[in-house]
Length: 134
Image (cartoon, rainbow, N blue to C red):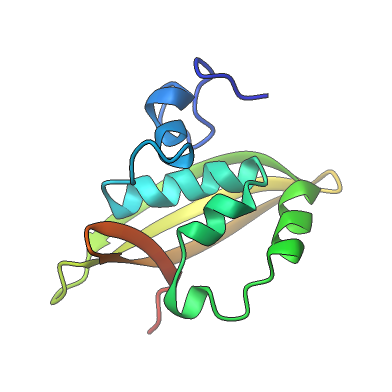
């Protein structure tokens, strides 16, 4: 159970309430693509699919199945997040990419998932739009 003073699951070494909790609660919007990516990891670790859906758009939202996402999130034991790199789009300041590795166990088997995610900012708010193409 996460309390406000618990270290945030995203690995920032900050308390949950001063890190992802402030975004997941809706008190503030994530100010950067990295902050949004970290908060989405934390939300998945809590199976908070409402937050996941609220922070995605474009191709990421196409065909998204919240029931399946909740089932998947609850079936894992979340072990950690490692952000490898954050980089802006070369021509569009409203797009950015975050390269990361997520670690978890599924049925007691250790697994890792690496991804480069794309984020877009619309009217000052960041959204996950999918895996980086190309």
